[in-house]
Image (cartoon, rainbow, N blue to C red):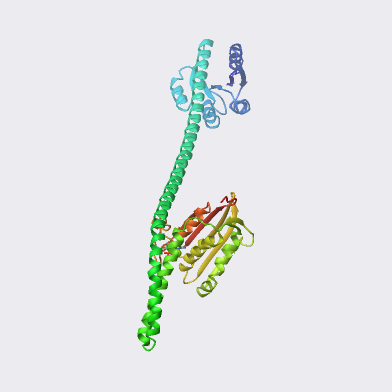
Length: 390
Ligand SMILES: Nc1ncnc2c1ncn2[C@@H]1O[C@H](COP(=O)(O)OP(=O)(O)OP(=O)(O)O)[C@@H](O)[C@H]1O
Ligand SMILES: [Mg+2]
């Protein structure tokens, strides 16, 4: 593209001659006789270069130069100065002129200087463009890096989750083998103890104090039996009683069984989406265990009242049941352990509840996630595949 040059000089002869020389050299040239007109032309035509006279009435060259530097930083300026104007020239260069030409000037000198200044200007502009492009590319690389890092982190978290799931599954399998045999072995003598306690009770009917001990024995036997039932729930092999059920009905039935506890503890229940049926193929009695345990845990945390949230929804081809509470929450470092069999922070807890939950959810092709903030509450998210193939 042809470079545009504007000449600003109050002497018309200089303007005319310079215009002629430069047009002959192939430049597009415009002329002005005063600074105001010159600045106006610059604004209109965006030239590459301005030839500016230093000695001009009204607004002199220095003032005009400063104004060009301020408002049109990309325009190069060569100053015309009178004879003996070297000191002035130094000031002009400091103020941002690219070069200066002493009047009277030789045509060749003027053309050489213009060529030179324009070449430097082109390199400078190119440089600037390149550094802008460089900044842009650096920014882009940084963004890619961030995306990559977050993807790696995400994959890392996913891997951790899968690993802990494998460990969990192994723990459950190991526990399953031992507990199934153990529970069976314990139940027989336990039945005998219960039976003998009953016989003793009738033998001791005239000694109420001793008879009371037999009742205590019976209660403890019941407690052990309860633990064994839970242990068997954890280790049960995959369900057999499959049927089409409505997940919302399962959840509601489970919730209803806690009606008394909810009212005694003054807990407010917030249900959402439970009226809409979620048809699912699974084992309803096993699935009920999931919600029984989640509700039991949530209510345990809200002895002084609170809010129990139960929501059902469909997202990404998954049924989602969310059980939330406003209890004490779970410390972050304990979150990994809560699904472990035997992990319990309760005095009389077996630590089997969530292991059962995990087993049943997994056996139905689903997953369970937990979020918790200490002092604010806990939220369990059960996801089950909408089109469960069993
Ligand atoms: N909603 C909850 N809020 C706070 N902590 C919870 C919640 N649910 C579970 N936990 C923590 O996880 C632990 C394990 O729960 P899990 O149901 O497996 O056993 P448990 O409730 O202790 O015993 P069990 O179920 O036999 O009564 C609990 O002891 C408790 O520390
Ligand atoms: Mg529990």
